[in-house]
Length: 247
Length: 326
Image 1 (cartoon, rainbow over the protein chains, first blue to last red):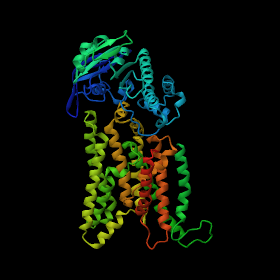
Image 2: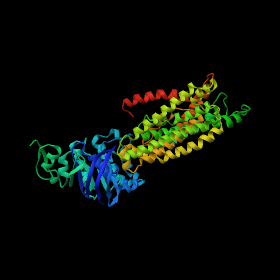
Image 3: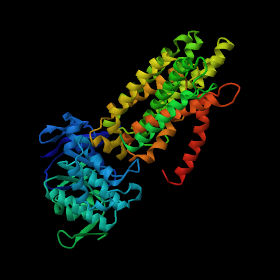
Image 4: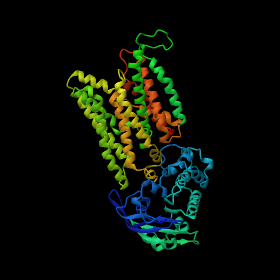
């Protein structure tokens, strides 16, 4: 099920943040959205999730305009993970995960169990979120998205505020989702993660798509120099690259 | 029905008969010779008053739970929407115009006006959310506070410009909510509106659960902000408006009750609605029975006594929050 932006323009409070962007995303892969601060990455993700109405153009899911989809059907198809873990009440982990079933209006016991198991949360299920570590909380919030069994998972900087081990753990989970046929779109800050783990990278700069393709080409040193104003080069082998700056 | 609901339903079942027996004249259920007019006191004075206390307390408790869920804040109160002051303004206007017999209707009209104003603002807020303008819930709450201060100022103006001392004392007395001398007429006015209001809030319950994750995550789960806000405005408007129309302003119940209930539940807003309604009924019923039996020259007003309980509780809550235990 294809998720595509067609000549998409987005505004926030009347200020243009994304303009004339077209990209067709394929399920079963991980697409990374990268760019400098203020490039419009989070806005693009919101637009792709159908949570920010296009100022022009459209976002389509399997050819149908996302804006015309009933909110519930859209919620069943697209799971969105916001950047900041912003949890109002001190609920138990398993109750938080169960919120992922809201679009389905069922108990979804099987799906919730599967999500808890996939993120290795069985031992923490009864624990209130205030007593979870940052890494555990990030897993619970991703499990909430998985419990909704969406065909697309859109995550805004899911690796921020996680230590290295938890970053790699979460990436492994997202890869497993893509392997199972779900579409995964993540906003990433760390270019090395995008280079090593994404199947495709979209580079945004001031609201425009300036590079789009396999990581090796979309994140070529010339692109990094042009967009971030940093001279850098990639070290290491494909799949295990590191970025050397100031080279 | 969760555990908290069972606890407060049981408590209510104990409190209700006790409240019927309590008063200046105690009624002994086991005495073979009661006061000559015991049956009359029960049927025409105490029963309607007790039922009204239950109805108003249930409405305030449920709308408090819903407001805290909606604003994602344990310090929220149904008063934040400004509907109670608007209803009070309507009631005061009826004193001012010398048509105090039409007070409930005037108060409901005030509440309706407030709800209409909020619904208009709500429509804007929801489309702003979709357009990414931000502000959302916080902005809407500020609009409610604006409405509250406007109604408060107009009420104060009506007091200072009262046509005669009698109207003045009537207004001031009435603003401190009470259930004294209420009859079945008030029950007939308040109960259906309160029932409808709580039912509307129940429709919003699962959307409030989704808001636990934040506004954007809730929308990604299929929550429609405009619809949710409209349900809240109607639900809170009906419960609070009906309460003010028959009993004046009764504060703090909506703030205090969800806190008493929350630790007994899984803390999701949907699990809080029913037990908060039951606990609110218990609290208002108990407080109203208490003001009836206190040996004072004139009966302490219910609105005053609840605020006397509520304000220190609020302070304690703030201290607890500072310690990070909420």
